[in-house]
Image (cartoon, rainbow, N blue to C red; front, side, top):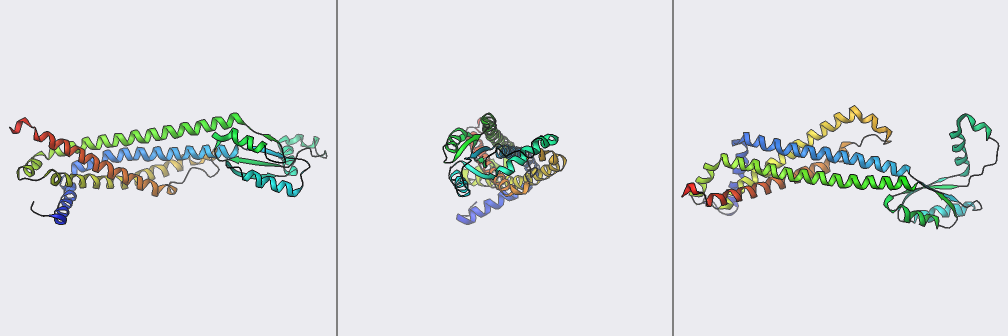
Length: 307
């Protein structure tokens, strides 16, 4: 109790780590509760990532076809691409020659293509334009239409609006779910720590009776809470990764219908998820411990049983 400065802080920190083992049953309970919340958050995040990837693939397939003027020479056709790529919301621009376009149309006819073979090609050169943000579809379309040497365009405004609406909805829902789970995690860990403190009320009263300050009592609990948060974060990453890989092997092939590359690899987001889990675990552990011990100490100051 008489240690000062760094020595006192080091002592209290060691006490916090020691308490994890001394109160291992409550530590396991705290880790289990926080782990459950973090796992749900991780699964929700990866579900959102895959949903966003599906939407991105739909967006990439929903192109605006810009037909170039029939009388344009090769140099003019090349300049059209440069002008289109200057438009801020244009993500990509793929050239389709009139010969390629005509061949695609014949292939689409299947067995009836022989009826049109040998006829003059009526199609002009074109560009398939992929947009970066479909919410800006109308304004970008007008810019494409006003580009020099663009004869006409073909687009699907209704599909683009639906995809933009779905993306916005998925984003709002994902943020809402993650925030709710974060609040739930904080609430549960706070109540778990309250139970922990109740089971150690005699220890706290002894510390108070010998003159320990509130900070002296609070710090080991905060270290304990943050440590449990770190342990929960690391374990949660392993659980989410294992569950995700298991699901990927089971239904990953079905996603090829929506995504050419299949389900999103977990390793691409593993580092981000680990950092997020550690941050959430440390913050909820520290904040939950600080709030709970402060309330408990305040209640003890007015405990009628002590009068």
